[in-house]
Image 1: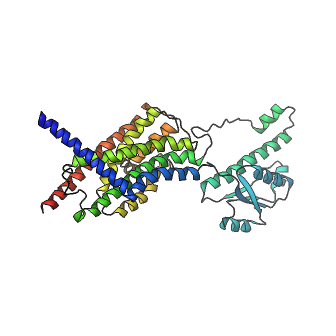
Image 2: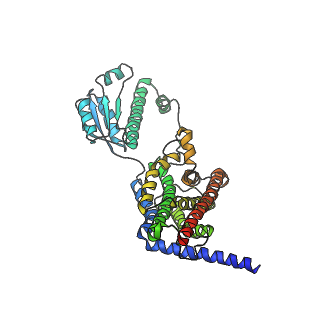
Image 3: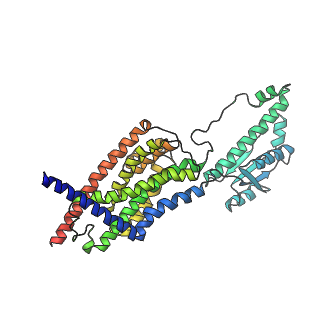
Length: 401
């Protein structure tokens, strides 16, 4: 019994020692400290500040008014009075308007044909052509929707004048026979930041941990002789499980602080939707942080030099964001790529966080994601132990030689 207790005590002593050494390395290494501390602190503030306006306003457009009628001027003034569009230029023809778009002076074109007022006065359907710069989706939305809304209002006013109604109620029914109540669910402002930023926050957590752990591994290889990941002259590094748990304790502690900051402090500072409870966030972030740590430890064994981890993580950041199903519908992602997305904790961490924080989901409603995150944490823990056991054997072989 005393031998067993001594082994347990020895195991915890080694784990705490490795935890201390890893924490000291994080503090002393400026690169690792930047990825584990500065990136989680600074990146979310930068993204939040960029997307703080949520939607585009005063999007510049050019008007080609070939009608030169009172009705066309009314349409132009209505569009210019809207908060999303600013009529910056008037062009003589479409070629001149296109040149303004090509020089990025405007983001859209409103073309009003010569027969615009004539067709309306005859009771025929008039046409307004809208050309949008599709390189920026938010600008396209502002230019197109403004034209649709103002055209609808102008058409409603024309219908009222021709209807011969006697009461305001009859005018309202003529203008809008079918009333539509538009309710924006989970994103009242319809803003881009409230939609995308929650996914970016969770992706930053995974990428920061992977970058920091990988860079620390590259530093260890450069510092130890013969490029070994595990020191051969330290008696505390005498088992793969102890090494993995010691490192995981260090990075898990840092990840827990970063997760709390990213999930609660950043949305509160920038007034992004926060509908989830702390209990649901805890049960979602716990397996996600563990899975990200063990994922980083597994990948770190493949890192030979410090710079390699930056190239790898930066390369996969944008594909990982797409595969979460936030910026592109999950149903439209090919099955093969959906299978690839299952390898990364960010896929299910992002989906669970959006459902909790933006939609107010409870723990029971995100149980599938929580189960998969726990499975990923267990699988990557086993893989980390296997790869570190291999590294441990290489270190012992090198020491014996």
